[in-house]
Image (tube, rainbow over all chains, first blue to last red; front, side):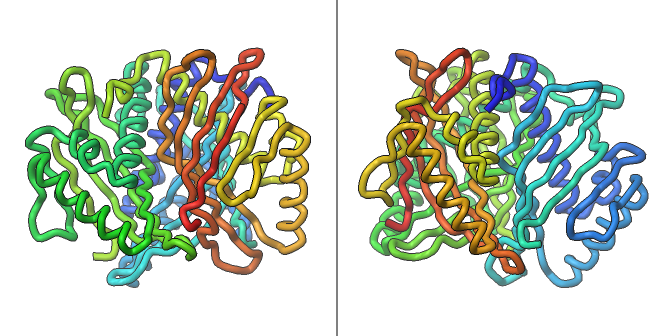
Length: 145
Length: 145
Length: 145
């Protein structure tokens, strides 16, 4: 533990903001709103994962990936819900806010039981553009790989 | 994403307040405190769900429903834990605070393994009475239905 | 529900601080950083659980317990992730902050599917030393026992 664990007043505001930002971002991806989802990334945003051979780069590619996945899930009659938890947010430094958290994917088939599909940890670099938070870089690491 | 994703200072306070309110509300329902649970709804509060043919309306009916469920769970030797996550809280408008979130029910039988019993998304209309938050209307949508 | 459910401005700051503290504490335990984990407890901190015949007392014992568990998990090729949720934080009283929450352990074997290993509720007494939060006493109650 470092003094990072003591949050100043400004940080409490940031902490709520990041939580709310992630909630809206996950509502977008889980409801298949690919364009809204992509708009939460910087124009040249990067989505990297240990499950992928290479990162997805830029809004267009990030949007397309989710559009494909959403169509596949709908065709299969399956709902995915992304849950973030255990969020630690560092102070902004050089214009970048670093956040680390855990993320689950809960998978529910129509007529079936929910299961934990994925358990991961993740790390984001967040930036501000016109006052809004955007993801500049996300790295997601699946626990099973 | 709209400018909704940028939270003002006042909203950070509201965000913590809603989180804490939900925690206490779920501690009440999961420990079978039906009266305490019902008191977190407005007198004419509505609990609606896609699992039910019609909404439960008013504190007395909301209390009775939980009292029955709590007795059934206790008789079966099962513990339910309600988890909320990915909470997005909108600014108060016309006296109503709108919150959207995911909710799980984790089910653990005595001597057995926990499972995700339900995976849902939900939407609340919250109001203030004498400074306290109350649920005026809740709509819970199960992912499996 | 009592007036506890209404959070003052100071409490919103505390609420974020406790959430962030718990996130960093769980990142430490789940990555096997036993010393960092132990440093989040008071020198004479107590970790009690209904799963244990007696509490673990003091940083050295708390550190040793996690070091052993982390080695066992690594040898078994299993990742544990501790998730806290439904956190209610009471105002500081007589120098002690009382927090109640739910906690899950998500278990993922390499090459396998994640499952909920434990579902618990917990209660902490937190104190401040040199401005930092520390756990003075934690009681964890497994739902299956």
